[in-house]
Length: 186
Image (cartoon, rainbow, N blue to C red):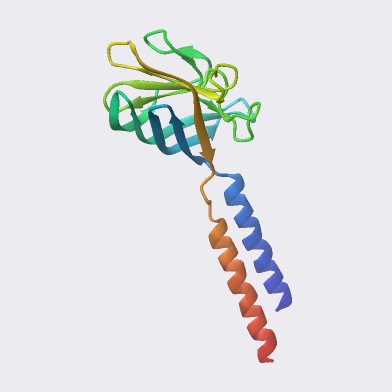
């Protein structure tokens, strides 16, 4: 019976760490002078480029001084995750994400661009582009192709959702209590 309990413990432990290691989504928040956004990004490995991840999806809400709260509808397309320009030639971006950090940041210099429900789009750049004392910059382009908001030095935070850690710990606690019950009932 001890071998079965140890095998069960090993499987639960391995599954718990696997869920965290394979997290494919990150919660995010953006804060700055008059700007806020929050939601979830989805990432996937870039084919043919081991160790690099592309942002494949995004959901959430965005607001700033000129835009009342609106939905984030998706990523501005960059199918190759190579540095490209938007259609108005205002942003260079690559929509790459660095889960282990890139100079301490999750986005590189070109950063990411996402679309809003009102037709505007937002560019957030990281390493090498930021000023204002914080590590990221944010720009908004409206449907006519003009900058409507330029926020230098914003805060962007990415966090890994729980990923089942709490449930894993609960399962281990229940298994431990069952083992103690059995030990003391003999």
